Image (cartoon, one colour):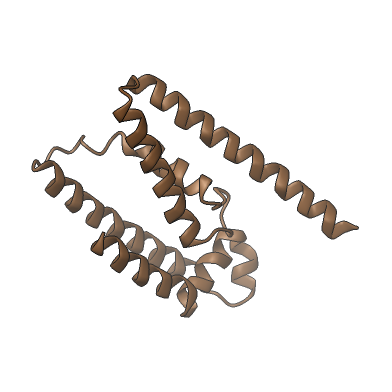
Length: 155
């Protein structure tokens, strides 16, 4: 939990304070518009990849220390969980929108859902089905809310 809080604070600073975060949000929305505004898109993309690699490295170290083994396939099941947590937290997969706190809240929700289903001895297949249904529902809700927002702004 302490590592999570420390990473949250570092990422929050990087995304909301310096030009790096603004650049990342801008290139996520539209790379060409960001370039026309004077943002060095290649440099910002490299920073995004480096940050993602650092987060993946920390995650791998924490998972390996938790499992007490260096198995390269032990984190393979977390791909859908991470995507679902991100979408449920309100981050657009198209880029440019989303909050770090929403993603953390989505991760807590997916973690609690997994914990409850494991405690109830729900089959792994049905856990994937449930998470997939939740992911689809979140994407439909955000799609509808985006359309309503566009209509509201038009009128």
